[in-house]
Length: 103
Image 1 (cartoon, rainbow, N blue to C red):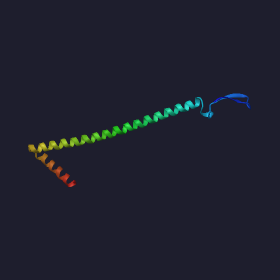
Image 2 (cartoon, rainbow, N blue to C red):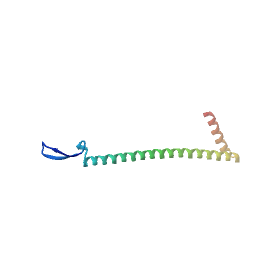
Image 3 (cartoon, one colour):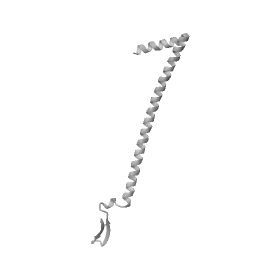
Image 4 (cartoon, helix red, strand yellow):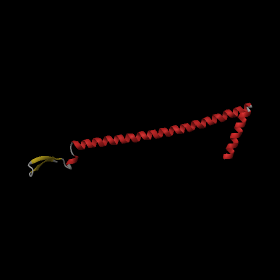
């Protein structure tokens, strides 16, 4: 590094110690763009990961709510059967026989 005397052309220029194309302002601009792009891609990837996980969580929550509703509906039907409702008893009997056939 330092000042180099170029006798053939009759002027001096500064040696940056490497390839002059990557020295100075153009390299800084390139490096800044590279860092900006890298940060942007990491944020994009993090956003997609968050969206995926939140969607997965919502689906699991919906499944859990569906199971809870089904369980509550069955408990209500069993209470109706105990009270003596014929239609509730028929529904419960049909559901249990269908489950046994599936298993």
